[in-house]
Image 1 (tube, rainbow, N blue to C red):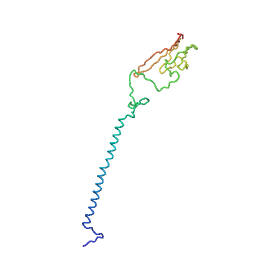
Image 2 (tube, rainbow, N blue to C red):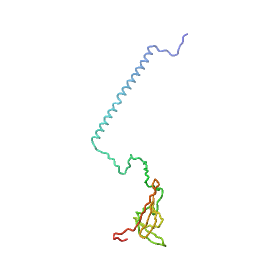
Image 3 (cartoon, one colour):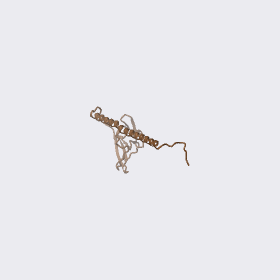
Image 4 (tube, helix red, strand yellow):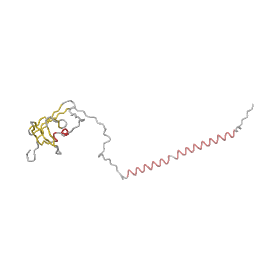
Length: 186
């Protein structure tokens, strides 16, 4: 039986020419790719050498020297959180308390001005550095830790008590007296 195909079959010579053209075309593309890869890195090398020479020129001529000033800046190497040192003798403060009136001043910041007697009760008057006057009575709180214990003729006695981290209570007695003028008078 004889089969007849609608398309004529190419001869052996035509078949060889087809593969030869494909091989030549592939070799040409490979040659173009290799040439491109060899030529392209060259401008990059020249650019790197030019950059190195400009860097050397910049370091040789000190036109601008950078100086870091720490004034007004935080040190970036200091950690934000600090470990709180715990000592048994360290005083414990109540920082959450809002201080008003006489509680804002420590006894040493006030000057004793007068001591009065009214209805058998001793009342003292003191002023701060700005000249603002305050009335002092026994039992009033003064400063962070002080309590006025006694007002007598010529002196106000204050008792300051504080607690340490170990729970030990430290008591200190402070006496406010009249300041003497330059002439030695009260």
